[in-house]
Image 1 (tube, rainbow, N blue to C red):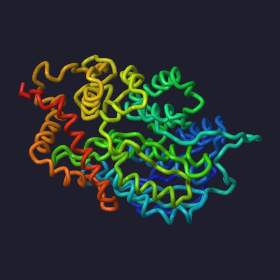
Image 2: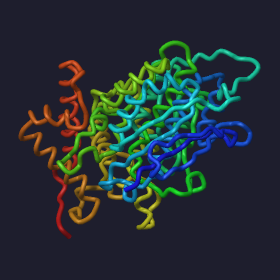
Image 3: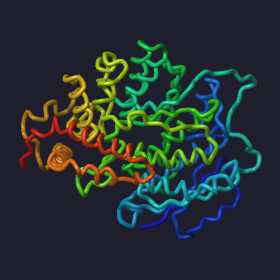
Amino acid sequence: MKRNSIVVRLNDADKAKVHVKDKGSLISKLRFMKNNGRLNHGVGQMLHQLALRGLYPSETAVDLAVLAATVTAADTRISRAENAQDSWSREIDLYIPVADPDLWSSNVTLIARILKFLTGDYWDIVFRPRQRGIKSLVEKPPELFATDFDSVCLFSGGLDSFVGVIDLLHDKRNPILVSHYQDTSTKSQEVCADRISKTYGEVNPRHVRANVSFDKNDLPELGVEKTTRGRSFIFFGLACLAASALDGETPVHIPENGLISLNIPLDPLRLGAWSTRTTHPFYMALWQELVDNLGIGARLVNPYRFNTKGEMLAQCKNRKFVRTNLDITISCSSVTKGRWKKQPPGHCGYCTPCLIRRASIQAAFGNDSTTYSIPDLTAKPLNAKQAEARDVRAFQIMSQRLAQRPELANIYVHKTGPLNDYSISEIESYTDVLRRGIKEVGAIVDNVKIERL
């Protein structure tokens, strides 16, 4: 096990001495600016796209984006197997230059708490002044022009965000859509945008995308980590970057169904193992506290936190449109897993996100136009020794348990994060959406046969 320290320098002119707390840690240097003075690693890409739309974020929001990108670098390049004391929890120190070190330093404990909850790692962040000569990282043209965007919405190319955007546009809202893209699973963003354009007007003027990634040339001494539990930190960071460029308190919509938001473990060995805790209410509350402390005018909202995925589809404000086009969205946790069988990228049909997707479409519409590598889960027994049966069996166990003892949902709802600061009515609503969500998935998995083949 080795502690890791990442020292960020905006460019080669930054020669300031940085005192690394743990001299025995593996020290990596990360430069953020190209020779042309523009920020690299996707942050400058997002700033440029916002500028083309007349949007100019605050310097604090840019520093937040740089922090979020550095978190992404650490999360995706520091191997848990090689660096974590228990093959899971890593110890990571970040050294970040910012415009207002005092402001950021007063929030170090909160940021570390957010990251610990999200990734399971131990983080320490040290903020220092930007180097002399760099007062602003925001590119502004000679003439500014007004924009009329009224909100921000994350747009992943998944089914939940597809519904979220449709509902906003159907209500005549004017959101700017923020996407993070990287691999095959995010190619659906452009396809979804094209389909939406044909019904609700050209999406391109409101759609900004960035690829925040780091390869072996950026941090050559580090390896690769595939769990990516911290990925939502960059999603939120980019969304708040856009929100800071709008006037007043800007709603930042983060559409995700309540079952996935709660991230309840399906069995004792799966605590928090579904995915990152992107929209868990505790995580979102911590983020809201951070942006408030930083003076960034963003109000984080998940309008579907009390809805199952099936209820999102059934209550979509343009049911016909979403039903006709849902096949272009991506939900699978690993769309390329079938490559070993020479299958094209697509939905496996048996991972947790795929099962929730299948159940939601069945509940809302009956017929599902999505292509899955296992078209019919009941056509033949699933192999208990293979991944195809793992999540199906886990849902079966949870479905049976809650059917026999519905009161257990009152306990499970607290498993993945505190809900103590929420009103009784909200906790009851989270408990209810857990029950309904598991029942929704149970409808498609309860009769699936699993055998040792």
